[in-house]
Length: 382
Image 1 (spheres, rainbow, N blue to C red):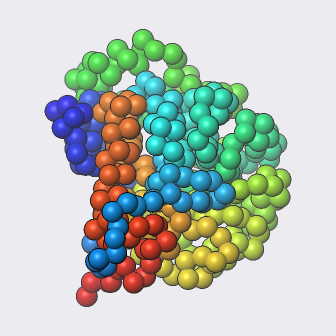
Image 2: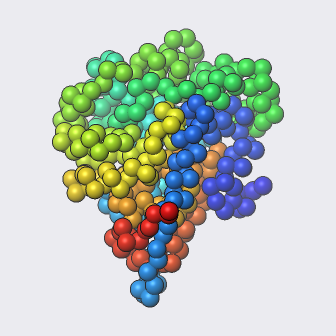
Image 3: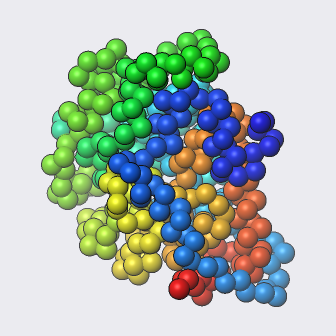
């Protein structure tokens, strides 16, 4: 199977599975516990039907949006995800370059494998910094100051990961950073030698945002230890309100799911929220972001930019979310599979296909602009 034969999310997933060692693929592919939320994130869209409007003269469509003060050429952005150079040796460099080419926003994680500064210097497209809240307040302040000096456009605080989810696929393979593989996991690495060659012949794997705080040689400060020992489960609204004041710019919370929390986010000065259950990787059995979207938009959509991620696999999924009031939609696994499959050309093809789907589907919906999509564009199935 070649990149040119990839026409949708599932094709990219199959090609990624062929090219990645099993433990690495399952790290991307897996969810928490029984993976119920992971599956429901996508199936939730099946209960919502699009209702096209005809004879609107939609020969040309404008899919540009403005979200959190950033002008994007398409209503989809690349959500921040960790450890990208594990999936392809160019990692965030490939994703940022592809996002730049398509005029959209990309995210860099605290657990990113390329520095904020390098990506900011090379790419003009809007950059999000996905931030984890640490027990060490001095570390939080230093990381925020560094992001500000680097020219990050949007601070995105993840609020659904005060501890790591129970990802049993990783437990079975022994996946961790540094690697502590089971025998079965090691055998799967041996079956994909090209991945190993790329891993050892390119620059050393590192976490430049956390170089001084996470010991990549192992021990208590490994990635597993990072979540259990360095993140602060006592984080509260007062802590976040202080961060919002200190940042003094575009600030959103990723992982909000209730109306009450959305209202609190608006009250403390956040400019955006992302409805998310972390792609089903944290609390299994949690409600899907799409199912919560209308309720949250109705409550706070006039005060704060409401976005969503988790489960997006089609352009029609994007249109359904926009019709319910989402300002933009984030993708994660979609571009990660493409990255693993073919690096920057893979991510570009994924964004190209998704943009083409959105454009075609808007024409079929009779929508010339994103503003033409509203509650009249959808109906819920019985």
